[in-house]
Image 1 (tube, rainbow, N blue to C red):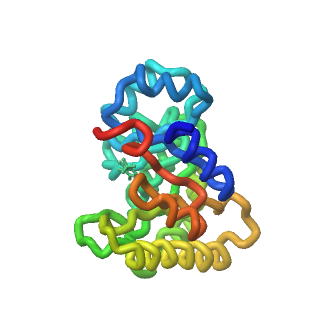
Image 2 (cartoon, rainbow, N blue to C red; image 1 turned 90 degrees about the vertical axis):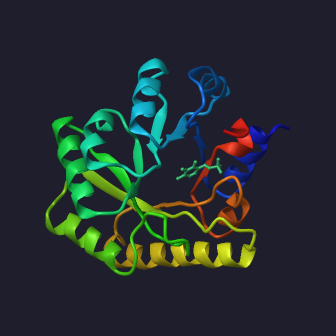
Length: 218
Ligand SMILES: *Cc1c(COP(=O)(O)O)cnc(C)c1O
C-alpha cells in the first residue's frame, strides 16, 4: 500500500478527512491523485491556487491553508471551499463581502495559535470569542464558521505537540458549547501535517493537511 492509500485509510478510521496539500506541485501531479478519487486539495498562495483552479476539474474542493491577505480574497471568493486561516475581524468582513458579491456562503475556520514559536499566525487568548461574537452580532451571513485550525510547534518533542493538540481540542469544545451548541456546522478541527498527523488524529483532528509524505519533498 502506498502512502496515499495508507494515510487516507488512517484518516478514515478516525473519522477524519485528508486535505492533500498540493502547493508547489504541478497540475499533472494533482491530476494523478484526482484520478484516484481525491477531491480536497490545499494551497497556501492565491497566485498559485487560481491557475490550478482554472485548469483542473471543477468538482475539486480547494482549501486555502495559508496566510490570506485581505486584498486577495476577491480572487478566490468565487470558488474556494474552505479557508482555514482566518485570524482577524477585517479578514472575516472581507470574506463575507466577497462571498456576498458571489452569492455564496464561504466556510471558514479560525486559526488559533497553538505553537510556542512566535512566528506562526493565529489568534491567542479570547480573541476567538471576540471574532465569533462579532460575526454573530453583525450578521455576517455569507460566512460560515465551521471550526478551528492550528499548527503545532515544529519539534520532535511529542509531549509538546500533544499538549498543543489537546489545547486546540479543548478550545474547540469550549467555543462549540458557548456559541454553536445547536449548530452542526461547527465541527472541524484542522490539525496534523506530515510530521504529526498520527498524534493529531489521536487527539480529535477532523482534517489532516498532508503534503510531503504523499507528494515527496517540495
Ligand atoms: C505546507 C502546509 C502543510 C503540509 O505540510 P507537510 O509537512 O508538507 O505535510 C499543512 N498545513 C499548512 C498550513 C501548510 O502550509
